[in-house]
Image (cartoon, rainbow, N blue to C red; front, top):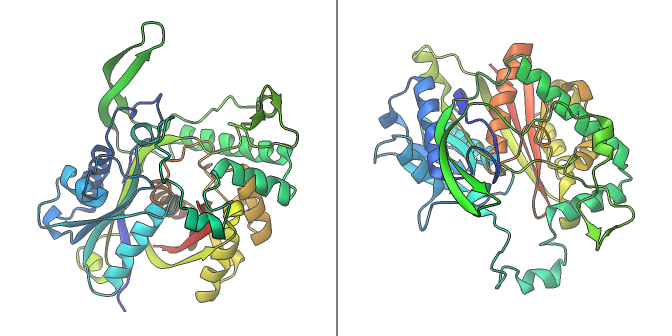
Length: 400
């Protein structure tokens, strides 16, 4: 069977949803920007691409079309290049890469673009149409199927005795590691700056104005964070003016809502070799697993063992881990249950400090793991995350 290799990666900086530089930028524009950059970095002719696969938790700017096709169009791919959208919540970007890789391995594609994008600013609103958004047929079987992610994090915290202090300590680590990585320029090779228009809302006049801005870095990190400042934050869930006893989840130990896009170019390994390309890494496999809906955050605990067993590996064989930081509580639980060395886990921080555009994060994590893996001389890297609804996904890559 053929091998699928990743030959390039490109992403936008991550901008705070609603308040950041991408708050008026459509998802296909962000997706197209990174598609164009990834293809240029790979040195392939756009007409050679067989498919453009993009993940998104909530498609924006698509009408009856799909975000993969629209990102390809916006990214300068010709009409001959097909497109597909994939949705598996926070693993959507990873699933897109896996889908493209498997089609290359099965001789269905030679070259593909895959990634993820999310415009939370233009999709997630405070007032949602609740009419039949919840299936009663599902609720009869599983009353927790539609439980908000924040509530599932509270369940994990209480059920597995993850203290508020432990969550805040982990969150501080994430902030510090991201700050160090930014200062060292470790994200520079990933990010392609994007000039766009930002909406500016004046609270006093209630008017909105627009100004040109450049997003060239992640703006969610809070390098001045201290353990004291994290401890001072109130839990998100409250009962009137009184904080409910035993609540743990705060804005400081949760992932940050943000907008962004990431893409990579995958290619048949033999073709890449003939062209003299130096791959970032090789796709080795994927595993998915289900878990209880009300504790969706622990999904990696079930997906990772399946992945490693299929490839004859142990946790100690993995040199770098990217475990999406949806909430500090679930990262702590997964890390400790799986026995992951903290020094190998999210070495440049994660979604708590970098930001989390849902469908994009998996693709960002793959690109960063491979680039960081090369810097460290790593062999295997694993990208894993929990998934809304009660699931986990894990992807195995070998650094080239």
